[in-house]
Length: 188
Image (cartoon, rainbow, N blue to C red):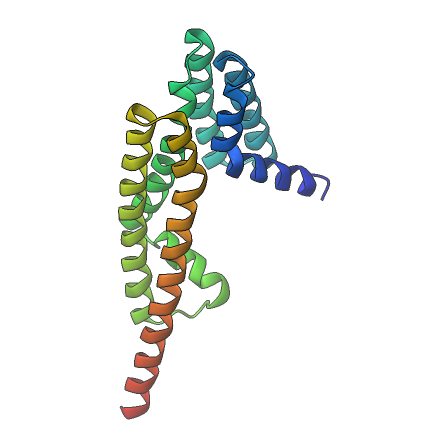
């Protein structure tokens, strides 16, 4: 219970990370922002206490150490790529070792998921894998070749809009699939 406000704060800072880095660069050297990244990553891992966040935190610490050692902004700009890579790993691994990530989430509200639902959630997990590949590639491209402002805009806003569009699109498709399956069951 005591960690809930802290968890919310860490989540907000993580979401705002690209804009915080962009704004911070106007006033601070990259090495000081790298220390902040390292602190946030450690704090998130300690609060979450899950293997995923420990691994993500370790990756963020590597980026923070590189940013600090070289006083370079590039490692800091690679953090969104790390997040996309970690999410891709989680979703892709769940395809190899079922149940899929989306199936696990679906079973939280629908424990008796029918076989059609399992197949559908597997396909949605594959779509999310594709999203993380494309989003990670664009994130990398903005880190390497775009201005700091474009990097912050893409990774702090556009990528979230794209994720929201995928969520909304999947929700609409799921409604149609459920209606179709209900109609087929009623006919047959």
